[in-house]
Length: 53
Ligand SMILES: [Zn+2]
Image (tube, rainbow, N blue to C red; front, side, top):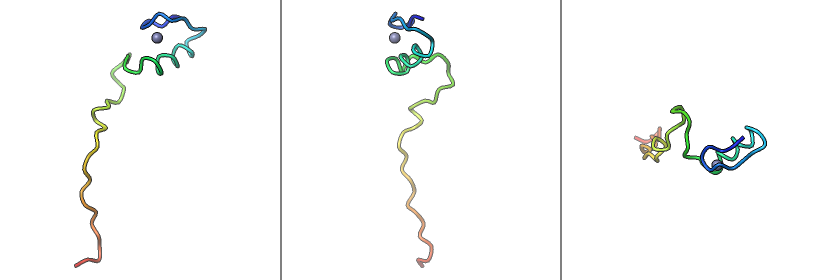
């Protein structure tokens, strides 16, 4: 199996997969991956404290 990105050779597709995840995390094959843009920090609203008032 050869990595189609860097042309390195691997014994099997599992090794190739691992290599791709490690070395080419941005080379996504499909569009089902979660988009990191959506994981941005969001400001949480102040917690409501019951019993005050
Ligand atoms: Zn590679």
